[in-house]
Image 1 (cartoon, rainbow, N blue to C red):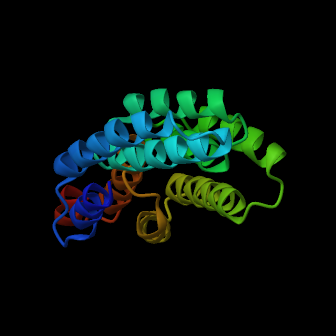
Image 2 (cartoon, rainbow, N blue to C red):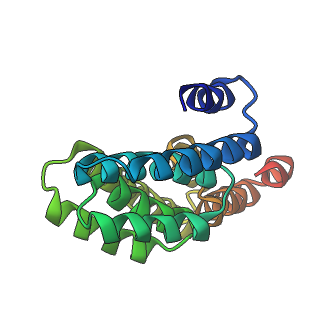
Length: 192
């Protein structure tokens, strides 16, 4: 098992990460680990180990942009441990990555209700709120023909956006391109 976990760590710490290979390695770890846990008498150890490796699998699937598969695994974890904080956080983040801000905020609010003082949840919520405010400001600046300020606002959003949220992030590039057109900087608009 240790050799397999070391193989997995090798694949996720390399400079050029091979996420498909990491996915295969974590699958083999889960297949090895779960049958061995049948002999463990303490149910908490079994659940922890199963959840731990499943969360690793979810992280890899997110990198591969296999969001629906990730959500299915999160649902399995939450059946075992309904208040598992990492699964609750990842579930809300996955809805954001899929482009569903409302569902993300709904699931995030549920998670924060259970874990009131969790810094990761609060920080993620704050970042989403900050981006939403900046986006509305950028749109207002564009509407009032303050194209440079709008361009700058969307550039700030792009510099601070949540990675891999392609559906949402692409709208920020689009809106910044519109501001570039307003500035008559067409080559910049083409670049995004």
